[in-house]
Length: 268
Length: 259
Image (cartoon, rainbow over all chains, first blue to last red):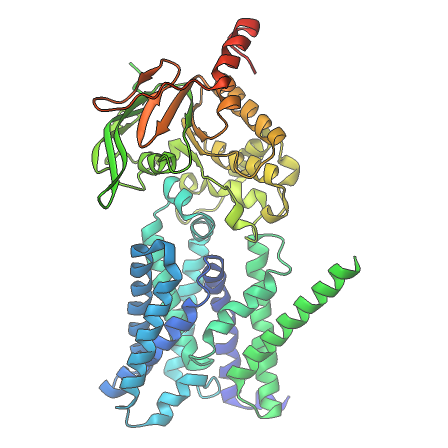
């Protein structure tokens, strides 16, 4: 196939599939904790880190990771201070992130490199970025598997998990850091403006079919891989941007599932 | 000598400058089945949050199993059934088995996975509440009464020494509630499990419970003994619910076990 004749497409598929595996692992926890907008807040703050990195002459992905970790910890801190309005913490950090990104972007000398983070550039992955994605994917997937049962318990009922002796604070901290690094790396590839969709849409599709928590995670990963691979094919042959295509495919698929479910339930 | 399961002395709690609980004092002995009654906003849930270490008292002490709550670490020995149970988890994609097994995770330990024995323990807990045939069902597909039984299985799987229930009757019908009370009374009688339960259902629960505490306007009163369980400035409100009279009548007819 012509698509596999290009080295950059090999990289795009490797990076795309790895991200499609780790993003839903983070996404399912974020969605079930009812913090779906967290991905948006973090990815927008990642932009501030990208701008900061470009201004200071350091790798923008490292800048994004640092900004995302600070933002994620900020969300967690504010969430603890005002538990009844937890979602407000996301809005506060997102506003701060967008504001900072807006101000700092004015000082970036090469706007093209900054703009590449808005919608991502999965087909323009450097050696360093490929290595970074492989390492981060290994860390996120390994941590997710090792903390699988604790993350499930905390997500289902944080209070009972604490009573049962689960180190809730430590695990929440680890999860926050994992979320931050996943969002940062995904911002570079699928784009900061759409990373949160990739976190939520496959999980939303999987929740229509999953008959258990484990099954829902596996379906989420399956859907994310399907959207990514088909999005890459479509973008290559139709000549459209891959990041947006991947997410749009996911949204269309979700709408089809929801419509079909409604039609089936009406006919029953 | 076996220490008291719970000892509360001179407990006070304020939200800002507003007093919520004042001069609360009581003890719970091993094997007690205590009903905590009181109107909405009386402070029952606040008292439970203090007992579970979620809130810090403004004044006074709480001792769990003879140990000051600030040093207490054996939380798995306390089973807690929150108000409204799974109401906010109706769409959570988890099976009954996954949910009940979760309470064993701290025993299983970090970085370890459930073994055959853990699965057996989960099955046993589900059998005890008559939900073994629903192990693979999603929690959101069960009725309110079934969800409540899962909630109990989730607590008893850990074999706790003290079970705290916060208004488990909320949102369930009378028949389900009666079954729940009977189950708790049986558990209390056969295993010696100590139970503290907040409820509005004064008439029915007093038939099953061994003691009744009443929380009104932030002050605690023991109804059976008609004495304030607190110290100093507690206000005793002469109030004997109808159920206590029924209990006495049933005791006279059927002996101590009126279930």
